[in-house]
Amino acid sequence: MSRTNDSGISFAENRTLRAFVLLYGVMAFLILVLIGTIYYRYSKELMLSTHRLSMQIEAESYIPRVMAWKESGATRGNFPKDIAYHTAIYTKSGTAIVSYFDVPLKQFTPGIYKESEHIHFLMAMGSYGMKEMLLVFETKDDGLWLSAMWMNLLLYGGALFVALLSLGLVLSRLFIRPMREAVELLDNFIKDTTHELNTPVSTIVTNVETIDESLLDEKTLKKIRRIDISAKTIASIYEDLTYLVLHKKLAVVDESLNIEDLVEERLAYFNDHFLQKQLEVTENLSSCYLTIDRTKMIRIIDNLLSNAIKYNKRGGTIDVVLDATKFQVSDSGKGIENAKLDQIFERYSRFDKSVGGFGIGLHIVASIVKEYGFRVEVASRPQEGTTITIFWQQ
Picture 1: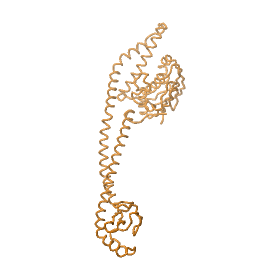
Picture 2: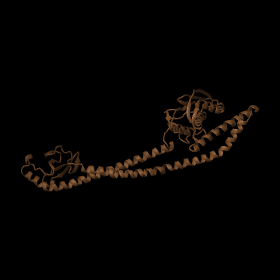
Picture 3: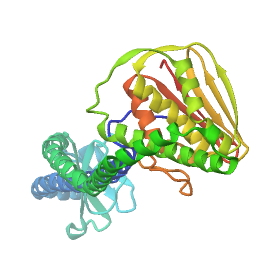
Picture 4: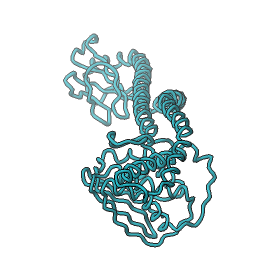
């Protein structure tokens, strides 16, 4: 089941723009994450380098005390404490000789490391006659470097995000421009076509209606009816094109309409189409009054009936239902694949390329539905048929 899209832009533009924004957003996010990761590592290394320098300087004054401790018997009780750092003596295999640490050491390779909330500086004592020993200094990480890093990330990352967003807006316009230009070109073509169709279509319809069928033989009558059907088809397409091009300029006259009478009138209008395709039409109409522009209501009815005829099979069925809550047209035609249901209201979209038309009928229906706050739903099964329902209330 599908519902109309309430977006102000076309379905194709909406779908294309969503894909571009998603791709651009993912790329921008990955760029920001990469920059953030690099900056975090840089800040951490800068912090550790600062602590390394301080601890190395402190070690120069502390090592003589360690040597004196070794010479005095190296007992735990007389192990010298450092006023700046917690200290410990470990073997390279990880055994603690003397330790004033709250948490056991995990790294046993000379260097400086950040472990949880602590920073450890490990110094090999081989050059001081303690070949298998490590001198370890410990200090607590105050987190100031991390706070500064986040502040800079938010400040400069925010500025970079705004720059990427601005660039994205520019790129999205460039990305959509070819599609907009193509649609504008097609719209201009339709305007020109509509203008040229007006006079010949009106002439054909008027002259066909004036023919006295009682004076014609059966063979000629069939030809005239085919001309009439074709003329009405062209007239219906002309009305759609006119509405599509001029609907924003046309005066809207909302009035209380008897929708039942209007549906019966349009069914009679399409009667020759039903006969030509040998379609069985079932009507289930009940009283329904709406305040709506007559032209727009006709566009809804005509387009649903036209589609039910166009995509139906010869000898198929059409069921028309009208009541106080909805208008529904069901056919026994080709149906629509689920993957294409969300595209049927897109301008210039035709889900069966073998059938003629501009693909604007359901787009017009969707625009009118949105304008009056109605709701349209589509249910379809391939090779079984399609049901389109207009609900008068949300």
